Each structure stands twice: as C-alpha cells, then as structure tokens.
Image (tube, rainbow, N blue to C red; front, side, top):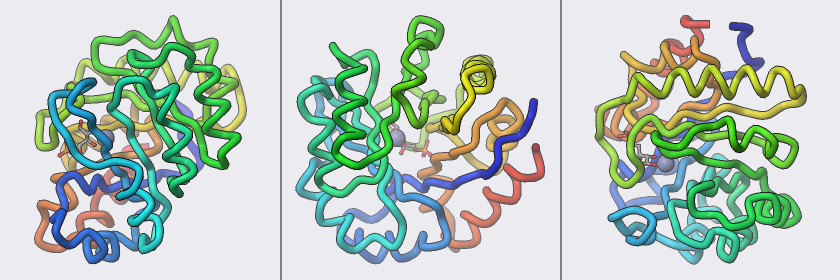
Length: 223
Ligand code: DX5
Ligand code: ZN
C-alpha cells in the first residue's frame, strides 16, 4: 500500500457534551476537522441536529466542519449544509436518487463532496462516481450510534476504494467512521484510509487533545 500524503483526524462531536458544543469544539483545535453527524430518525434510527445548528457551529469552530448526513433525500438537503458553512458534506449513496447531481450541487455551494457507504453497500457499482467526489467514506459500523465495535470486514472495502482512487488519480480522500480508536486506527491506515473519524476514542478520553495526538501517531506508525 502506498501511503497517502497526509493523515487527518476528524473527531465526532456525537460523543461530545451537546450542552457545551462551543467548548467541545475548542478542545479539538489540534484536529483537522470536526465531524458532525446529522441524523434524521428515518435513514437511521436516531435524531441529532440539522442545518441551523451546523451554521451555529461553523461560526465558532476552530477547525472546518465535516458534515456526515445520515438522512433521507440528500439530493434535496445536502447543498444546504454547504451553505450553512460545512467545508465537507458527505451523503449516503443508499439514500440518494441523483448522486452526481448532489455531489455537483455540494461543490457548487463551495464544499468538498463526499459519498458514504454503509457496511452492506459495495463500492464497485459506484466507482464511476469518483470524478465527482473529493472523499469516499467507508462506514466501519452500522450508522446511527457512537460507541459501537469496529467492523474489521470493512477493511477490504477500504483497500478497494484506495486502489480505485490510485487508479483514478487526483486527490480523493478515503475516510473511515465507526469504532476507530487506538487499537483499530492502524489497520485503517494500513488499508489506505487517510481521514479518521473518532467519537468515543476522542471525547471519551480524559485529555481530548492527547487522544487526538495519540490517534495521529498510531495512524502514522502504521503506514
Ligand atoms: C455513527 C457516526 C459516527 C460516530 C462514531 O453513525 O457516523 O461518526 O460518531 O462514533 P465512535 O467513534 O464512537 O464509533
Ligand atoms: Zn459519522
């Protein structure tokens, strides 16, 4: 595996204290992104927050927002998250009717466009979408909740996406999300991931900044 140029950490505020989100964002200023999980209680059986909250977070965050939309009808809603100030907007291919149009609308609104795959969704049918994308998210848990166990069987998909990205050329990131922690991040990096989402592994730690640094180190050591 040829290693990607940079390894980026995107702590998920799903595991943060929702009563103090501005302070929780300040605590991850040494990370590369803040991962914001948007859930609609339809695409996934959980409900979090929407565009008005993303807009408020974008005003105070020391790092750019990485919005992960776990919602139905992203074709209609995803560009609004770019307009709300998210620098990267990820939508699920399982929910999209028009992934090309949606990715283009996200980019036209000024954000990076990313496509997410649930654990049961293969990558191959969507490889043709790469020219429209800035990142592919390989879910390493069933989306909906933090704190679940990492699914090792998704690493083959990470390898497959990395290989397709290499063949395609250009700078397309490969993100993993779910159960990413000290003991799993190395395997993700080795498989070709370069953007690592971690919720409980960061916000569950006593020292959040130290947890970000430790994850970064563990990923770097693996490649
Ligand atoms: C799960 C979310 C994840 C979640 C990860 O549906 O997409 O971003 O916050 O949490 P951990 O790192 O605890 O698995
Ligand atoms: Zn997520």
